[in-house]
Image 1 (tube, helix red, strand yellow):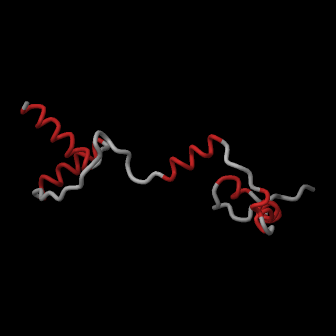
Image 2 (cartoon, rainbow, N blue to C red):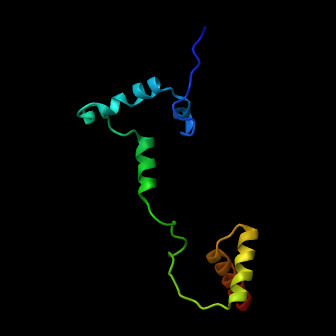
Length: 108
């Protein structure tokens, strides 16, 4: 009779959630060695690019960048704009920016 494979912790993500205790021990054994840096190798082109993208913080600049401003807005108007943003999948800043662009375009 075949022994049933019982996962160590089914809540773990991906393949780790399907591993038995023995499989888990074999998988993490490589991290228990001394001087694992001896087994390291240089990053390939793809991994270097991913690392560089991960190092960047914040949103990418649009145009000449962004400037934070403190603006006082009537509560009811802010609630309406937040609802509009939620329905249309936009941020509050995007709704304000779009409104300013339309207003300035109309004025010129």
